[in-house]
Length: 119
Image 1: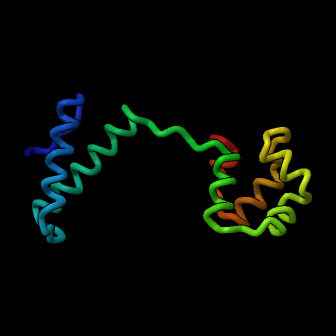
Image 2: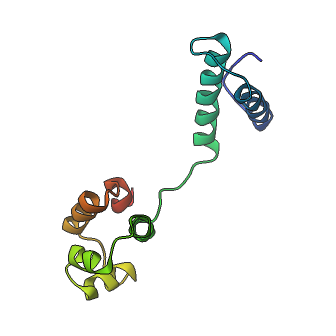
């Protein structure tokens, strides 16, 4: 298959089928098949970004997920937010995230600022 810009769903499906075939092969770095795989990956990614965009995660849901992933103890979380009440208000969307709190969450929980800002 000759790699080219993907313009429609038919070409997208064909590209996905080809990349599946390539994944089953033992690709040697620098080989023609490895180059084809890399190029197809980029073309598929570009097409998906344009036609199937993934919305940014909700900041509050991102906080809840990260806390769960890290297993942050409640006492540490309360301290991060300043109080139990503030934690409850933020997680229940009665209070917004302040710039200072976003910085703390970014530093302590390693949540990207772009997610916390909601960009």
